[in-house]
Length: 171
Image (cartoon, rainbow, N blue to C red; front, side):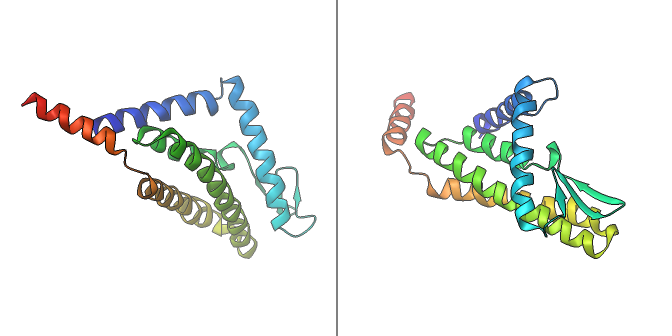
């Protein structure tokens, strides 16, 4: 457990330093790419003319902007760090990294559409829809994905046998 926690936090630091920190040149390109993808697919979910670039026009004076913090990468990095730190095969980790990215991205699109619908009803709904319901949905998605990752991993019996026999030799 201690190894998992240390590996998890190290993974978080590495992922956010390389792919999210403002000073990282890689971060700028990855986040712009993700914002553009998210904006494109969001535009397909909304009424024609409601979106331009990464802006969703609620009214002439109220605009929602899809920015770096809205592109779905933050919950994905938390998920990715957790599966990287958890013992499993590399093949299983790669499979779930891809599944997680696709699923979190899809849920993020739904979240943006959901926030937009709430705000269209009443502009004061933004905080409730975005900060609580939408982000709660992303947290729940990450937890469900991580639980599924754990439940579907194959236990390496050789590794377990080796650990047990080495522990027995210690006694």
